[in-house]
Length: 45
Image (cartoon, rainbow, N blue to C red; front, side, top):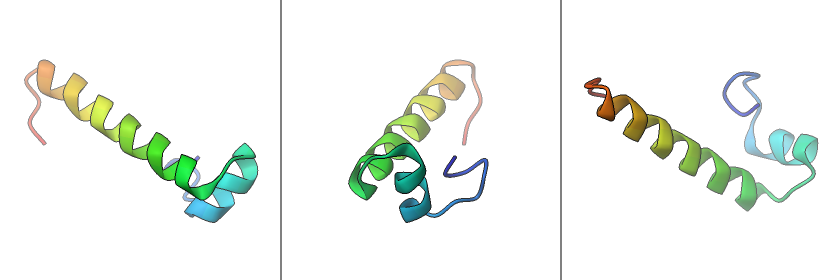
């Protein structure tokens, strides 16, 4: 939601029913996982 729907942290937190800190943590973990998966396939960021 944060990136696909172009929502800010507060809007995303409200939509997900969680804290803003939780949104930030989820986004950070997701982007790190994506970077790792792409790197494993030889795609450099």
